[in-house]
Length: 102
Image (cartoon, rainbow, N blue to C red; front, side, top):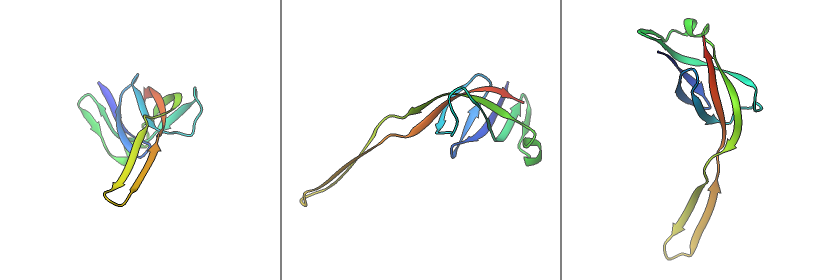
């Protein structure tokens, strides 16, 4: 089994060919192809972590869609002072499909 650990949007994700992964927003249109930098590559029993060898590895993914995440509600409250504050946030996300690890 071949899989790679890639850096995507400030986090690291474990991916293999055919995986659907949701990452932080990538500046690419739906249908385009992006390359993700590999941090580690596992090919059966062989594990590659050396930077010079990983520079030859390319992990390509197809952008499926740009979406927004679930709404997070932030509420602040202080007792007996009448202070209440409410704020919402939705993360900008991109859903990608890994097409090749070479």
